[in-house]
Image (tube, rainbow, N blue to C red):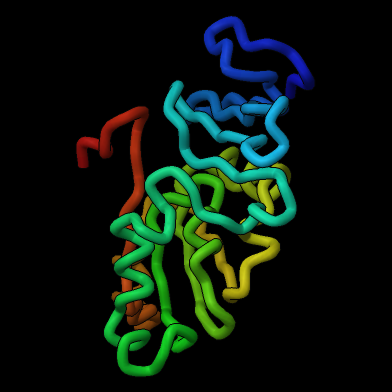
Length: 180
């Protein structure tokens, strides 16, 4: 793990942490440190951002990037039938293939349950160590390790089907969805 060193391949910010394993390199970098409101930590895998988190206390649980409140995911969660009919705090059972920094947990309301499926244990380690979406979420959070397709199939076959209200598939290899 590197601390406060510039990454030779990325001049965006200081590398806070880096883990290399079978799946490649995952790193956390500091971005916009000079701007208190925009200062954030960013997770990268294969040179592609996998999520970020603002560091200002007032913005810490604010989903950003393509996960903001006006994004497709933000609108799908806010506009789900259960929330339209039961109010904005009606709880949802959410499945997510691909953890990233856990930014989807920033949309949670009390009573929500979110189950993440993550293939790369380095992603989970860095998400839990450097980002607070999982720890500070209003939802009950679970992280299952392994290929999401296989884990979902096993759960269904064993009678442990999760009956998600929404299943979000956000798994990437570099900048592309995996071939399978």
